[in-house]
Amino acid sequence: MGFSVPAAFIIISVAAFYAVGMVLTSVEPMLEDLLEIRDETNKEKMAQLSTKIEIAGIKTRGGAFRYDIKVKVINRGSTVLDPSKFDILIGGLNWPFDYSPKNKLYPLKSTIFRIEGLRGSGWHQIKIISENGAEAYGRYRIK
Image 1 (cartoon, helix red, strand yellow):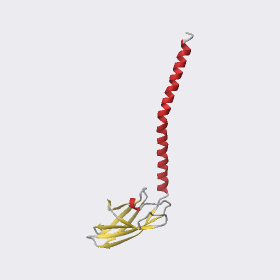
Image 2 (cartoon, one colour):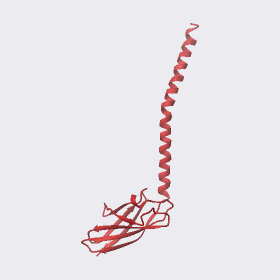
Image 3 (cartoon, helix red, strand yellow):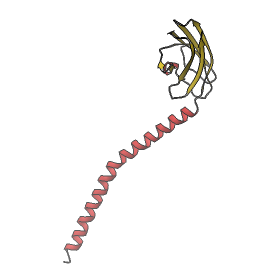
Image 4 (cartoon, helix red, strand yellow):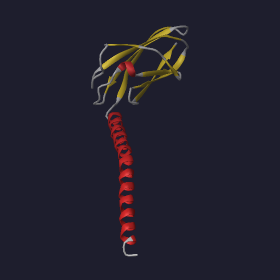
């Protein structure tokens, strides 16, 4: 009994250290991934909090059968935005658009979005959504 107890203790200790080492090497990459995801989420939240867009004006041209609109949007936040990644919803539908100038939308600058081939009369609501989720609403009327 004198030799078997210390030998068993050593064998169990070595096995425990080996098991702890295996667990740590498998958990460490997952922890790194979780920390990276948390950092990316925080960056996205900060970008969304520092983004504010405003519809400064809506001009319409045409009648109820077919009309076009121009929407002036101002970047009131502190984030540089890419207008090509915006979404424009009119009547709940996502509409294709063109915009000018063809560069980034810097803070306190504006861009003009053009949407063509719309139909309908009366009041319409427009929703503009930036690439990181900031949104602005507007209303216009077609007679």
